[in-house]
Image 1: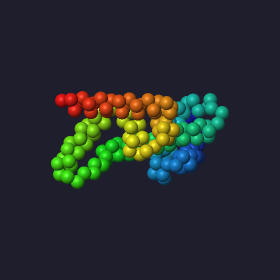
Image 2 (image 1 turned 135 degrees about the vertical axis):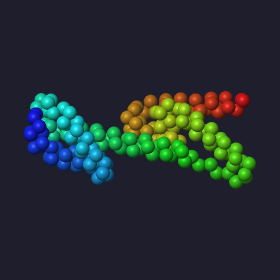
Image 3 (image 1 turned 180 degrees about the horizontal axis):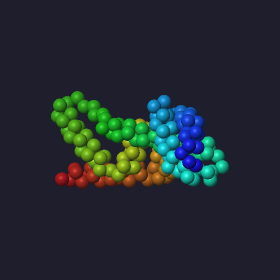
Image 4 (image 1 turned 90 degrees about the vertical axis):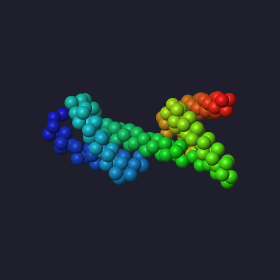
Length: 166
């Protein structure tokens, strides 16, 4: 496909990808970004487009995948914010100071976890999500979500025990 043919179809493809992104649950600004990224991907593969039976179907698939990726990225960003806002409720000043120190240690340890383990731990413990929800959001199996959570908990427990032995 040459430049002129691409430009003739680009407006229609942009509208189609925008509608697809909206149908996945992306807001208008995000859908606009998805539509733009879809056109960029199509432009990069413009020489291969003649080989596809339905370019419109390809546009839908690309836009849907980009929209899902954008949703996942947005959720992961909210996980990072949630881990920074772990609540501590204490009344006594001494207990509050100890609680703050423990919170700092916990946040430090959480930051040391591998990214996936950290994500699963926050989703399960802070947000209260089910294993099926976690698996769907991260694109992994339910068993993998359980294993990641177990490893994160075991590692944190071992670190806590190690800190208390000092």
